[in-house]
Length: 91
Image (cartoon, rainbow, N blue to C red; front, top):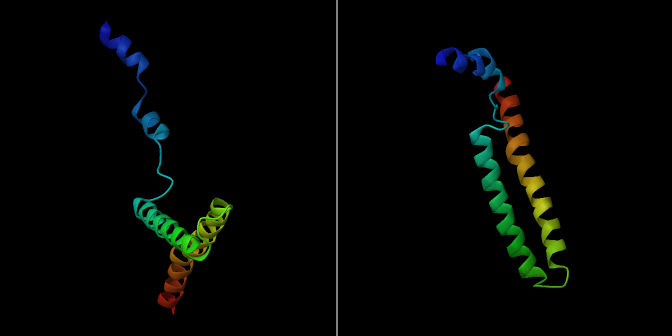
């Protein structure tokens, strides 16, 4: 009798597979994004402090520099270089 109660509340295997979470990004892409994030964070901090110092609008300028660097480096590393590599290999 206890077995039947236990089985009633468990899902079949096919439903367990259906409800499993899938990773949005592969681990290699996550690692690349993390490296790009840290690189851009440190570069933007160094550039901001070297050029303007710690001014009144430090965080706004720092965020702008970080955003621009992250978008440029991210699209270059994750889209342009693999795209060119793919096209060259197709020729």
